Image (cartoon, rainbow, N blue to C red; front, top):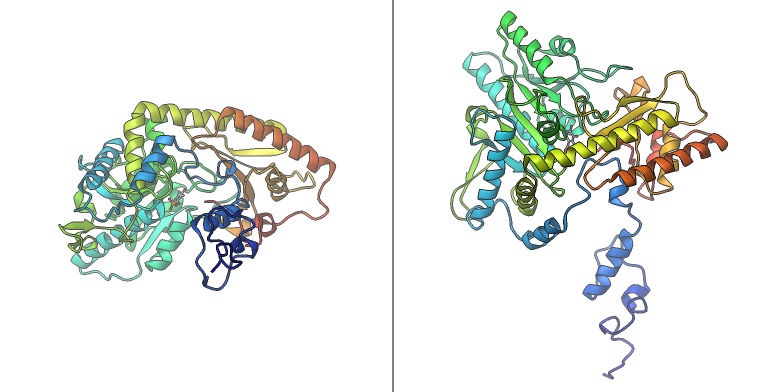
Length: 473
Ligand SMILES: *Cc1c(COP(=O)(O)O)cnc(C)c1O
């Protein structure tokens, strides 16, 4: 074989990358690739594909962390090989997870000061675990009282899709209070109307996905206290504090939403949202040990040592939990208060612009006593500017901003809103750039009203995947 034979395709590290055989043809999409290619070529193919993705920090739809300190990136890179389930091999990682749980038990005023809980991949898994524990407790109590154990239900307002999953995957009826125009939050009266002997829990969302508003845990808890006095029915609360759990304790500690209310038996929160950890970190905590049925905990010894596990997955990266611990140590209550306080201020700045610039009615103005660091709005009732919020989302998208418009449940109510999430790493200066583009978009729409207004489905189809990006995260 000659040194420069024509068929040593792509293996020569000095060959121009794009002139190499592997990059001269399109990569396989539907067949399992036959040939091996060089790491740099593979990396180039993957990186070039990703050029078409949006810029994560301009994605104002997501609740999840899109900015981290370089120290966190460094930790992630160094811990990628640790499996959190392997507690015998990585005892210090297990200790770090336990410390995070102690800290959260302290932050959320758990009864068992040491904390009973687990890290998860996110709030969804944590919510499913909280729901499962409630179902098991309810069934045990019904069984002990020789009552039937069929047809369990849970009561909620407009919840994130994880609760639809809980209902369907675990066969529990969802009794949902509808949103109506101007009434976005589940009321105590709506809760009471839906509770009966088969209610395993009321799920209260502390930081609604749709609007960003806090449901009133204290008022709902008091209503359930009244129900218990009248009927003897003792219905627990699970708080879905995906975002609120890492905001209110720092910036509005006087809101009582957590284990200070005896009726709150479990809480889920997303470490990877306002917890500021990178994506892949959630937390589930219980008020005290007796709130977590033992039957749900498995002890396994395959990895050496005895490891209790209460999770849906088995293997899972530990790096996110380690990064969460870094954030707790790095920021403390003071740092979180400063970071989150600034996010609320930026949200209020954006809300001010929204109210001033267009025919909008604010639903959530970013006020820390009413909801998370987000802004949500709708077209003012009775106005028809000749375009809709999907058109506005489309205009903003041309500049790279993802500001989703979506309809509130139930779909039939036909109420469309739009929302901006303000996250760590989104500066006041960037917010100003967003407002400048919003001003531009509104003036463009005024001069060129669309002949046919966009629909939710069309507004979401940003790429050949055709998937809707409008639905809330
Ligand atoms: C984001 C969110 C979830 C789901 O959380 P993940 O961490 O994305 O799994 C559940 N509930 C609420 C209220 C949320 O905002």
